Length: 112
Length: 115
Image (cartoon, rainbow over all chains, first blue to last red; front, top):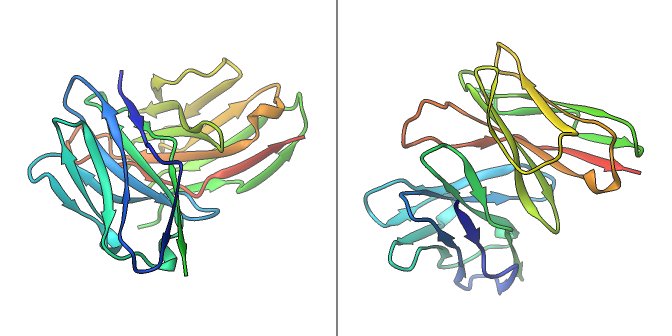
């Protein structure tokens, strides 16, 4: 079975600073990787996804993530954060059976 | 195209009662999945329905059940509510085409408070 670990439950960062949110997964088979964002009192919105091909994936709102198969990681990065990026971020894995597994989330707080 | 809709958005119940939540997927989507989100546990998969059949099931007690209708709309039912059932219940839909690009699209959730 797959599992997803988000190593940091809370990440505070100053406005315009870079940020990296870490995600590791465990799987012995091919997986597809996703990052979702959840703003307060809202559902989850897809940020980006890795299915195949280039290991560097670009998403919405200036976010990108890099798939590293040898380290089984899919870390999310943004070079310069804004106040509006304050939200909960979830890493997810989908297996070939179409079942999704989510990490426990990382709360990103951007400090003015 | 309208997104995933969930009703009601907020609900307050007391212990022992039962509750039914509704989810309407994006038009054309045939798969509906349900998740329970709590601060301590994060998102936990409840079940997935496809073509009116339960295709996958998470590790939840039998008090949690669901169904899907021919128009792909889905309902989730929780019987004999417990305090620990207080959570945000999220519904997600996908095409279920079997394609690699498959992505889940989430609704805004139903926040259930059990008193």
